[in-house]
Amino acid sequence: MTDAQVIVVGAGPAGSTVATYLARAGVDVLLLEKTTFPREKVCGDGITPRGVKQLIDLGIDTSEDAGWMHSRGLRILTGDLTLQLDWPDLTSYPPYGVSRTRHDFDDLLAKTAVKAGARLQERTTVTGAITDERTGRVVGVEAKTGPEKTPVSYRAPLVLACDGVNAKLARSVGIDTDECRPMGVAVRRYYKSPRHDDPFIEGHLELWDRSDPRNPKLLPGYGWAFPLGDGTVNIGLGMLSTSKAFRNTDYRALLRSWLDSTPEEWGYREENAVGRIGGAGLPMGFNRTPHYRDGLVLLGDAGGMVSPFNGEGISSAMESAQLAAEFVVQALARPEGPSRERALHGYPQALKELMGGYYRLGNLFAKAIGHPKVMRAATKYGLRVNPLIPLIYKGLSGCYDAKGGDAVDRMISLAARLTPSA
Ligand SMILES: Cc1cc2nc3c(=O)[nH]c(=O)nc-3n(C[C@H](O)[C@H](O)[C@H](O)COP(=O)(O)OP(=O)(O)OC[C@H]3O[C@@H](n4cnc5c(N)ncnc54)[C@H](O)[C@@H]3O)c2cc1C
Image (cartoon, rainbow, N blue to C red):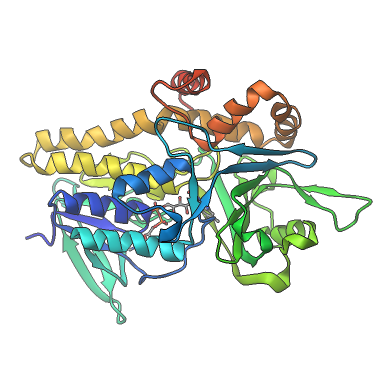
C-alpha cells in the first residue's frame, strides 16, 4: 500500500522545484511541508543569473512586471576600494540576477508545484523515515499533521529529502554532517532605504566598526545588501566555520556595529529596520553525503549544497531538483530492483559532475579565507590586478560557462577538474 509514487519532504526551492518537474512528468507526488504558505524564511533573497536560469527553466516569468527586482551586476566593497561589475555575458545564464523576499518566492514556487499537479500538504512535520526492517530501505515517513499534530505515516517507493539545513530525515537514517567541510552562519534584517532600487547587489568584503573614528576596527565576516525594490534592502552578514571567530561571535551585535558605521544616508539604522534579525546555518560544499542511498534522495541544503564561494544555495537547490527529477522519472519507469537502483545512483554521479569539482575548489577557498591575513591580501592585492578580476568574479559567483566559454571560463573549469578531493 502506498500513498504516492514519490514523497517530497519540504517545500522550499528544492522541494517545490522537484515536485513541479515530477508532477509535470506524470508522477504522483505528495509534497509535505511543516509550515503554511506564505511564510517568512530567513535568507538574503538574492538570486544570481545561475538561479534565474533555473526559474526560466521552470517556466516562471522573471520580468520586473511579474514582481522581481532585477540586478545588473555586483558591487564589491572593501575598506578602500569599490568595484562595480555587470553580470558576465554567457551562453549558459542570462545577464541579470533577481531578488524577491522568500515570503513571496517560496509561495510562488509551491503554487507552481500545485499547479503542475503535486499534492501539497502543509502543517505536516516529518519526524523521521520509515525503513523496511528486512532491507533497511526507506519506504515512507512518519509525520505529525494539522493543528492537533496528529501522528501519521505515508508510504512511497521513493522519498526525497528537501527539508533544509536541519536535514532531520537524512539524520534519521544516519546520514550525518561531515564536520570537515565548511559551514556558514548568516544573519539578516530588512531596512527601509533610499537604496532599495539600486540596480547592483552589494558584497562587503570588509566590515568596519567606525564608532571610534580614531580607532576603526576590522570586524570578522562578510556582508551583503540586496535591494528589493519595494522600499527595503535585505542586509546581512555571514561567517565561515573556517574562521576563528565562528563560534564565539554575537552575530546580531556584529550586524548592528557594522551598520551603525555605514553612511547615515543609506538608512541602515534601527529606526528604519523592518522586522527582526533572523539567522540560520549554511551547509556548504556537499557536507552531507551520500546524496542517494536505499530509497532516500538528498537535495539542496539537506545535501549540504550551499556554495562555499558565496553562500548561495537557492540555485544549487533548484539545480539538484532538476537533476533529481530526471533520474527519478527514469527510475520509476523501470521495474523495482537493480535496474531502478542503477538509475537512481546516476543522480549523485551527475550532481558530482555538475558541482563536485567546483565545490572541492570552494572548500579549499573557504579554508584559505578563514585566515584573516589571506583574506586581507586577497582583497587588498587580488582585486587591484585587472586581469584577475574576471577570474575572481566569475569564480566566486559561479557564473561561468562550464562547457566552452572564454579563457577565464575554461580556467575555472580546469581548476575545478584538477582540484584533488578534500
Ligand atoms: C541568512 C541567510 C541568507 C541567505 N542568503 C541567500 C541568498 O541571498 N541567496 C541564496 O541563493 N541563498 C541564500 N541562503 C541559502 C538559502 O537560503 C538556502 O540554501 C536555500 O533556502 C536552500 O533551499 P532548500 O529548498 O534546500 O531548503 P529550505 O529553503 O530550507 O526549505 C526547506 C523546507 O522544508 C521545510 N521543512 C523543514 N523541516 C521539515 C520537516 N521535518 N517536515 C516537513 N517540512 C520541513 C521547511 O519549512 C522549508 O519550507 C541564505 C541562507 C541564510 C541562512
